[in-house]
Structure formats: C-alpha cells, structure tokens
Image 1 (tube, helix red, strand yellow):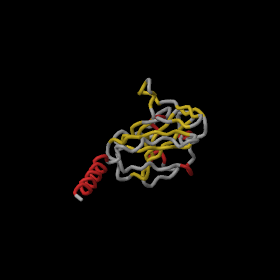
Image 2 (spheres, rainbow, N blue to C red):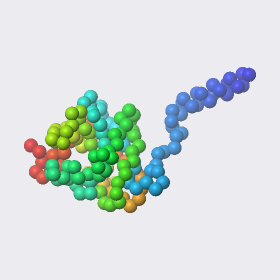
Image 3 (cartoon, rainbow, N blue to C red):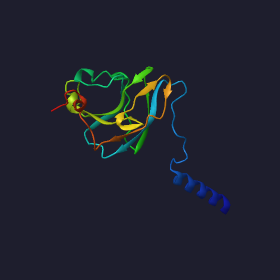
Image 4 (cartoon, helix red, strand yellow):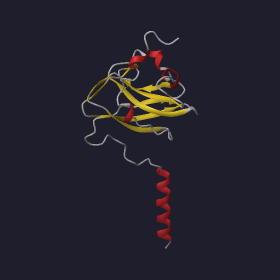
Length: 167
C-alpha cells in the first residue's frame, strides 16, 4: 500500500514539476499554408489593450493608404493569447512574398478613422542576417520558425514608418 501511495505522490510531483516542460513544441498543422512561430512577450501589457494580432504585408507600408493592405483580412484576424510569456501563432496566408510580418497592438476604442492613434507596431520578424531590418518571408506552404519578440515597452505608431514620418 505504501508503494502505491509513494508512486502516486511521485507521479503527482513529477507532473507538477514539469509544468508543461515535456509537452511537444507546437508546429504548423499538416497541409497548412501560411506562417507559424512563437512570439515572446516583453514589457507590461497596457491596460487599454483591446487585442494584439500578427499580420503580413506583401510590400512594406509607407503611407496611411497602405496601412490596411495586410493579410489576412480583417475578418480572419485571430487575437494572440496574452496570458503567458510566449505564445505559438499560426496565420493563414496566400502563397507569396511578404516584406513585413508584424505584431499590431490595438487600443480599446479602435475605429478605421482613428487608426493612426489606436494602432502600434509592437514587434516584427527580423532578418536573421541583419536584425536591424525586417525579415522577408516567402510562403509557398507552411512556413515555420517565424519567431520574434513583442515588446510592449517599445511600441511605434504606424506613421513612424511612413515617408515622411509622423510629426
């Protein structure tokens, strides 16, 4: 009887101690077309957060007119879970070349009219050879390993990337 109790206790302790550490690493589903990766969160999430999304641009947006040319469409956006220090994501995208894969923070009260003041870039996939530049992603099927950091302490207005930049 003591052996069973000890074995049960040991199993419970090991289960709690592993705390998900032995779980498989998430990957894109078989047949999935798009990008998958892990985002790591840094900084404190603002209280005014409505959502954070991952979007991709075929060409880097340089004006307000190109701000909403991202993929996937507004109707297919999926909120990132913000309840841990990292999150796996999968974004369905048409095959093609994407110049900017970016995390977009959305402030509560967002509308299309106030996008310049309620959206922020919070991180993006970087070029592995030059981390100061966005990484280009070519999607032909499932594209894994598009990992990057979302930093709530370093959020940028979309217009900071425009030509000319915001005042």
